[in-house]
Length: 115
Image (cartoon, rainbow, N blue to C red; front, side):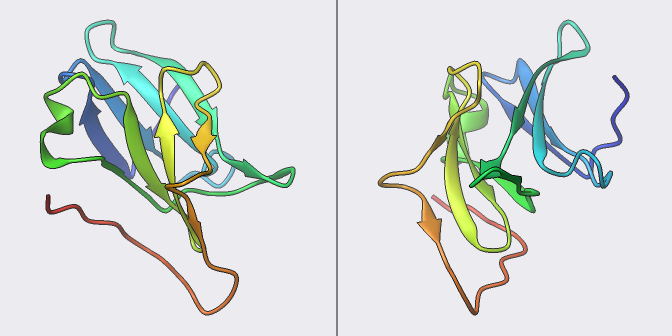
């Protein structure tokens, strides 16, 4: 699999990298690359009510998450903020209590963390 990432994020004690790609057919997915194996080992798709939703941005849960064995990260699309859990093979998005969804008036583009 060949990807051209628009965003890369170190994770899981700096052994993995989470990737977002701008390619139109792959924008709904977050890819996990194993740095030691130099290949994509997981792909998670964000689907809401049967529709694939493109992720605009991803960040770690806290400043130190990249260097710790943390298995969750935050994702953002135009109308929602959600938490992903990499321990689940499907990359299930936790819908409560962390997920926030805005029905109108929101157009979220980026996410930043300063904990």
